[in-house]
Amino acid sequence: MFNNDRTTTQELLKKAGFLQGVFDAMPASVFVVDSDIRIFNVNTAATRMFDMDRDAFISKKGGEALHCVNALSAAGGCGKSAHCSDCIIRNSVRQASQGLNVFRIPTAMRAQKHGQIEEEQFMITASAISYDKESFIILTLEDVTELKKTQKELEQTANKLNIITSVLGEGVYVLDAGGALTFMNPEAERLLGWTEKELLGKNIHEVIHFQRADGTPLPASECPVFKSISSNACYRVAEDVFTRKDGELVPIALVSTPICDDGKVKGSVAAFHDISERKRVQEALKNANLLLERQATTDILTGVFNRLKFNDLLDAELQRAVRQGLPLSVIMFDIDHFKRINDTFGHHAGDSVLKELTCIVRDTLRKYDSLARWGGEEFVVLSPGNTLENTRLLAERIRHNIEKHSFAGMGVVTSSFGVSAFAEGDDADALLQRVDGALYKAKNSGRNRVEAAFCPAE
Image (cartoon, rainbow, N blue to C red; front, side, top):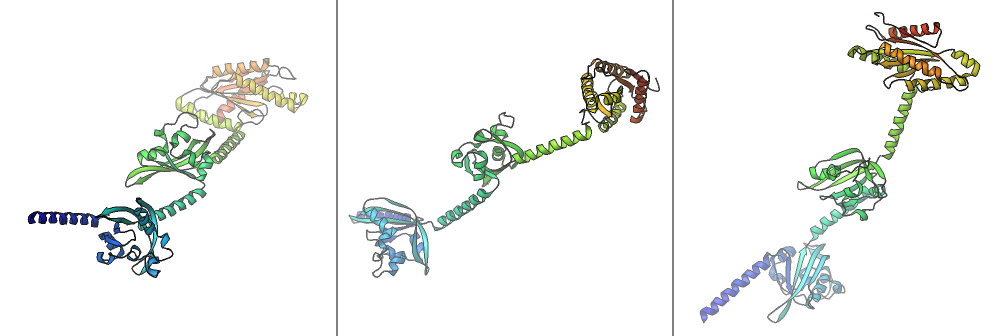
């Protein structure tokens, strides 16, 4: 009998020691209190947190043991201050005594620690237990001061970033690893016509970046924002398009950067801006340059090349003829008695003849041939790859088409033609002198005819 009692006692002591070990191993501060917040036991974490021995806690009231500012200032201690009715611990214990399980979000408590009054943040839980016909409250205080401080710092950082991104001239949006939108700044909302609320959680590629400028589909695998997620690389795109909420395409320039945490890609952030104005300026500049080039190379009255452009074309074709051994011919012609047309019908009528005549010639030439106004009523044709005989026949067709055309207000107009071909050793001057001589011969031989100047070797 004695041995059995001793065994039972040892087992109970062993069990009690185990439970106390578990109690002390808990990281949060745990207090065993009654309904009046008198402390019966605490764990090791509580002694460390409040720098008191376990025995010093016993029989103290909660506010006194926790060095509550209200308890320290009140006559009679914990529970006697006018502010005690607002005490979060007292109210938690009261609710637990009523059979409620209490769990409170991080709560600020003002306490005296190390001789100074500090505001600490605690996560408080309270629940009732019964032991040996007595009721107790298990009160747990988890110090989350540093956690709350970190959260506050993160919130402040987030607020700063929100302020910064809200005043940026760039649209900014953030995606998670799956491509769903998690953030969009006001400028992005303005440019895209969508609000952040409308797009949160949606696959942004399928909403704004699903097509190219020509309307063809753009796969997500080719989207720079998605590629920055899949390849963990930064992408810059000088020109792309997004689709606005109203369906309009907006030209943009884009930079996409992956967001990483511990070496893993968690998403991407994209910054973009509207390049519509830049494209308008570029287009205007392009058109201005084209106009300048046209003015520098084109005869304003007739719309054909001018003498300067013809000389450039002739030099280039001469080099090609020498390099590749290809034939090259030139036609030179002018309008017969053009001065008489001007004197009789006026210069306006003369200008009309020049314009009508160039249209006839253009319609007769091959697509490889180039027509230029040489000066006054004189024109030249550069005919690459054409032999002298074929070019003579071409000149004859032009002459015939001009002669059969009825010019408005004056009837028949004729022209005289000279033709020559490139010969070995020729430069531009030699070829032009030869074709000019052929034209002179045509005019002196009765006009309205074609004369060919054969190469010296012929």
